[in-house]
Image (cartoon, each protein chain N blue to C red):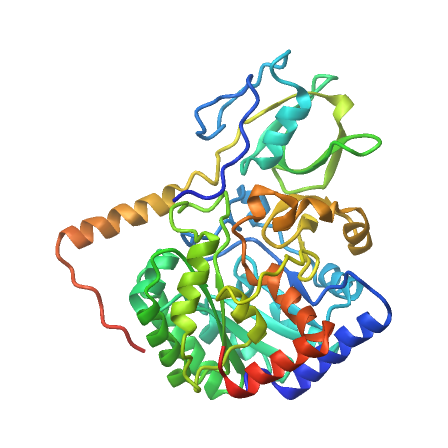
Length: 338
Length: 129
């Protein structure tokens, strides 16, 4: 099983409550960026290119917790920047766990061994370690030699201490399906709980503009990677989302599904695009021109996007929208056939 | 393959697609203040907001709302203080005074180094873990 039963139950009951309340737009995961500072400068990342005074800024724990309360999502993902560089990461995580939020601390794991004592194992806390492939591919993606080995050491130490550990992997043009399948085997051999995979988004500010995947290529690549998936591979995401990546569903984006809060406020409209900021979650939800986003809108920045932060929520909604969707999810989950 | 095509710049702006670093806009029929603000919002470096009363506010312009009843920009100054909210009506111009942090120089340096290593015949390392 890729996601603990208690977490699945929490998410399922949350989604059903939203549906029973007649809420058409609801958040599933809060993307909480406490800082933009990072100890890497990855080729495909458009998140950290800011002047020094912005990179020095970080959210207060109180502001972060207020955002969590405002949003109400059952899961909180803490990306960045590198969250282990956030000076109050221990207190923030402890407070989120106390509130029974399922926390994914997204880290490159360079500092994981050094800071592991800051944390206590919990079913609510998972280190989501950035791993973009086997050693050569990962170090190439993060533009620094040796990071793969550091991440592996961090994963091993976290697992040894009883933490939940998952991986998150971004795929770009040029990815070898065979190498990616070997990478999945390697992560399972390491003992991680499950993996998350997604195509990269075409950040206009990312240094490497040549290797972002277009939609048709994304579908071809994921179809090749996930054809005949091994039973031992576990994914920490909706199997419907994986089928979407393979071209078996034609979903529309749910940009409000994973709202983003950072030092600038509530980011419009999503984790990937920056069209401005709202000062409250309510303002974000009520005043964002959502009709301007997603593939149907014709917005050129959305045409090739198949990233999890827009489509994972759509996939979950698909599961709970009809008996057919639910049956499909159950079938894929238990047979393992995508 | 490039990423999605960014919208064309207004006629009064640099047209070569390169960084706007150092640009001092000349407002006029081919370039409105609203267009300059939009480009400043997209710019990943500090800018200098010149106000109509002669002040020069240096900082990172992170937000703007041209559709608000009173259109405004928001910025953090060079010390990180803010957000400072400035109505459009108080802005005379915005100068692209700071370094463009999205110019990708560290990535280019990495690529060049890797190409040198490959040219020198260094073999790829084993997969691991």
